[in-house]
Image (cartoon, rainbow, N blue to C red; front, side, top):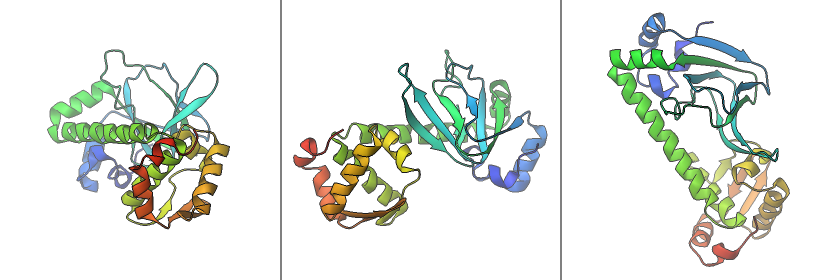
Length: 235
């Protein structure tokens, strides 16, 4: 199966390239494309990390599993996003988390040695790869900031304010389900629902399905920087 060059334009690795340029690259490139049904494991924790994945269609979930059987969702990746770039060139390059198909999906894989050949032939691709790593690091730092924000209410408010800024709107659409959001905040879903109800009753938000309206952004920002935020809410 051959990837659609128009789809690959959404991948940071090929950003700024025309369809024709990407088509030319594909003709010289060694790659594979695999399809995965929903809930299929694409990469298991501990597998050898010797290739870069690019999501061509569908959605995948990256989850860190614990010996107790519980797991924490690290990320959800959509069309054009990459899998495995952060560990590809580590000395101990094993997959640190399990990657599963959230929906039926198609993934393109490029081997490590093929990537090195491509980087040598085209330094712009290398630059894009480094930019991709940098953007992923920023996302990880944002999650650390949210998880380290303190009590659950503060974590929720911090996340909603961040999404409002990213979406340039007081109407925030969650990028994942309520269950996935709870995992993202490292809390139980009932605790999240209870705290969301408290924020609604306080007059700060309204919500329906995945849409959350921020009614008092200024008050929420003040709360993040207040002493009350350090003690309010439960994890």
